[in-house]
Length: 345
Image (cartoon, rainbow, N blue to C red; front, top):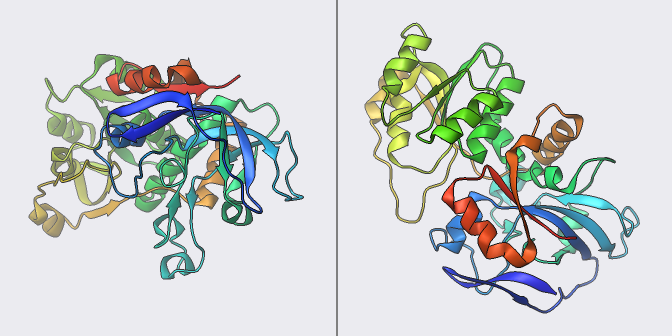
């Protein structure tokens, strides 16, 4: 089959590779659409190395059609499906406590297991038995289904800080993840959404996505604007949606007493944030991380996209064939696109 093969950092090429070797109970999916994630770029550039093997095939946001059901009667050849790419073991201490997204034996599709920037992808039997594979509702496009995974990660982050009706929410960064945060915060009943983003184009997109106020942090005083918009109190919730270390401390300066900060975005290798812990201490700020997703969040996100509660069509701004995988990654990295889809006929 054809695939985008990552041989080393900065070394990815479109070439012929061996078809996936199926084991008992594995299913085979013909990939119809896969979208490019910031994590794909970080792995490609060597800024994320944990768990990454070479050679490997990236791509963990995807949907496709089953061509071999592995003997599972619940699935038939031709079924349209999307897959939660985080495969938990189900028996470690974290899984038993309900923290399957940080399973101690977590296996990730997209680098630990070959991913979806390929014609076909193998889904291990364990993932099928664990119900990581979800049938798609009729009429849901392949590309929209691929966006269920990033929305699930956003849902995981927002559940931890409990965005609710009447909240003022500040989102730092208006990339694809920041935009999904804005959409979901609005869906959750946020009263006011403020987005900080240096790109003019992305600020405009954030307004369309549901932001009430957009700020250029390079020319405007974000802290003063947030204070003005909140009667001097600060935001109820702040989300760091882009992996820039200095933003962690910025978030502490704009959240209200007893407010909550989500350090949603991961940093690149060896990057460390400096934070004023006195702000956390004296203002009783709750700071939380957010990693990945679980199957419940995947199902909820699939339902929200399929029902139209969360609109994602407008985010799909660029499309490439699989043979143009290098160009697709380059376009996503430039930041000119919102979301880049890699589609297979």
